[in-house]
Length: 111
Image (cartoon, rainbow, N blue to C red; front, side, top):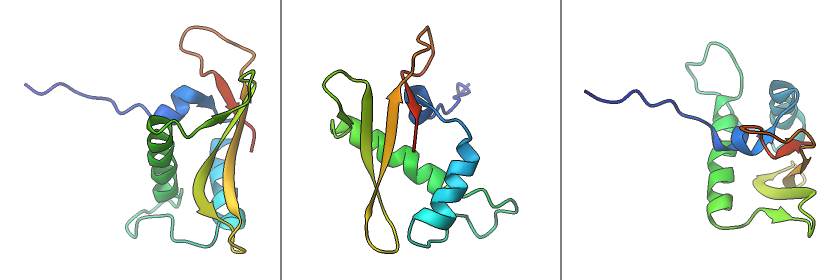
């Protein structure tokens, strides 16, 4: 019998994302170079390709130790690999979560 595995996104273990969907919407429609961020059969347009991409790039950069932290670990960022329509790199920026505890992500997404 196969075990039922629940996929837990590592990005959400790392950070709290206030207003996650609105941030994804803004990234997809206003900030990033225009791209098709939904599968063609998606009835609800929620930018699922973009969400999967961000999870993948976060895991890759973490494994390669390419997430940059300040000396005191108060802030961190990583290059998303995305660019604006003017070819400017887009970074994800986080600050230390002040509400520490068991199972609480250590960072909060800022922008």
